[in-house]
Length: 159
Image (cartoon, rainbow, N blue to C red; front, side, top):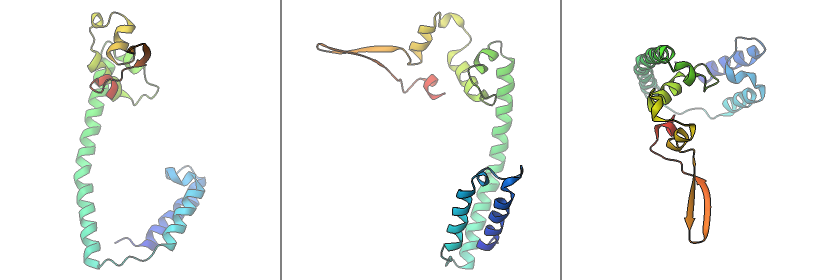
């Protein structure tokens, strides 16, 4: 069972290793690490009983054990989607819309929403209008205002 002292020891190791290349992401900010260490050292001691601590530990370990196969399945599906998008004739076009090469899920979502039928959107204005990016004039009496209509139902908006 991990104790506060062992957690502090791990954090201290991370803090001392912050100059090396093998450190955790947050250890690059020494101020945050120092504040975390100070808060942990000044925290009141827990009053949980041994059985409650063990029950909580078992519950967390059970949840982690349940998540591991789900994360592996997500990784496999992401790889399959990436392969499908890259092999699609329009894949380069949709992948080129994103800076990060890991954005295959967003590119696949756009490809699925827009489709590969180029006649569906003959102009860029037609595509912009379907995605909710085209300006719409709202009139009330003598008042007229151009704004954008952001559709909540468009999959283009969700991706």
